[in-house]
Each structure stands twice: as structure tokens, then as C-alpha cells.
Length: 279
Image 1 (cartoon, rainbow, N blue to C red):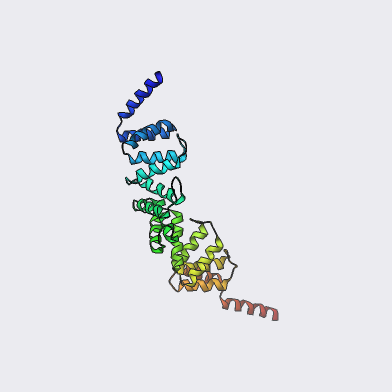
Image 2: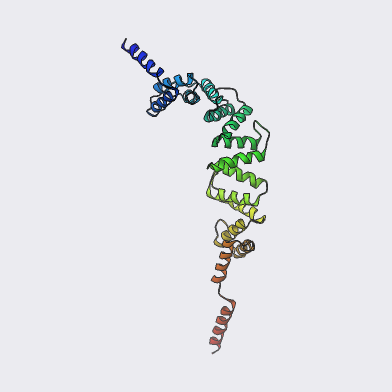
């Protein structure tokens, strides 16, 4: 009997909360790891139309926190929140459509959801939308639009998006794109580190006239960085970059010239040694 009374009192207490208070209490209980109690608060808020609560219920049912895993019900809660413009729910429902989680796989619906979330600034949705557009998945292939979304995600710090944006630019023949691709491969930013691919990209950019890439190749030939040392190749590439007023290439060339002894000094030294031998 005590348990029944306590439950009634608890239900009455929950009923007294506003939607905002229900969600706030649900989040606080979630942080404490009390998923059962959190769900009770979120359920009340969701029933009153809270998109945030609906989204959280979707998470609980997808992950099985406080309830049994139910992907179909999770997708339904995501849909309800998505229809109210909830950005995270739009993205999550897109992922469900793309991977057939809780509903039938539908790439066109996934793209539509990603677009809604991307328009609101969701970085992962922007990246996923770019991938779909670049590959023609669920939509017509459109490299220009793919580049647009990759760049938006990259500006928010998404490393894979930055790599994809640079790759697309390189594929379209941009020397600067090839150089940037080399930098990403060299540093392993958004992609596995690969010095061989980095040098290949630098070489393509250098051959197409990119001064930064010409300087980089020259520096590598000069110091044997990923390439066999070759002073002739080094100076050739550095001179090409310097001809475009590349400051670093010009500086490296000047250092090379200063480190070499003048021809006249060498001739004088040899002549002096010859005279000593004759005497």
C-alpha cells in the first residue's frame, strides 16, 4: 500500500511540472544515471509535445537505457521530434533511414533529413549530406553541392569534411587543392598519415605551377625528406618557386649559395698547393 501511495504522490508531483521543468529534471536524473526516473519525466514532457523529450526517448529506446532496445519505437520518437524541427532528431532519423535502423532503408529520405539538419548547422549532417551528394547516394551526384556542404562542415572543424573538400578540389584539377591534399596526407588530418601519397600530391601540384608545392619538393630533395637527396632537383624546384616570389624558396636558395665556397677561392687554393709542390 505504501508503494501505491508513493507512486500516486510521485505522479501528482510530476503533473505539477511545466514542460521545461520536466525536461530539466529528466536531464538531471539522466546525469545521475537514474534512467528509469528520467524516462518518466521525459515521457510526461513528450506526451505534451516537447520535441527535446521526444528525442531523448528515442535515444533511450535505441540504446536500451532504462528500457529494452526497441529501434522501431526509437525511430518513431525521432520522427515526432524531427517533425517539430528538432535538429538532432532530424540527423538521427537520417542515420536510421540510411542504415535501416527501426525502419526500411531509404536513402532519399535520409538525404531529406540530413538536409533539414544541415540547414540548421548540424556539422555531421553537413558532412553526411556532402558524402551522399559526392557519391550520388539518395540524390543526383553533384560535386559542386557536395563541396558546398563539405566546406561548411570543415569550417566547424570537421577534419574528414576538410579532407573531402580538398580531395574534390584536387580531383577538379586545382593545384592548390593538390598541395593542400599533400599537407593533409603528411600530417594525417582527416585521413591516415601517408608520406608517399603526400609527396605524390605535392609533385602534382608543383608540376601544375603551385609555388608552395615547388618549394616543398625542393626542400625535401635538399634534405632527403622522403626523397633521395638530389641538389640539382632541389635547386631546380626552388628556383621555380623563387621565380614566383616565394619567400621561403628564395631564402633556401640564398642559404645554399652562401654555403658553397666561391669558385675563385677553390682555384687559388689549388694553385697555391701546386706552387708549394714545385718549390
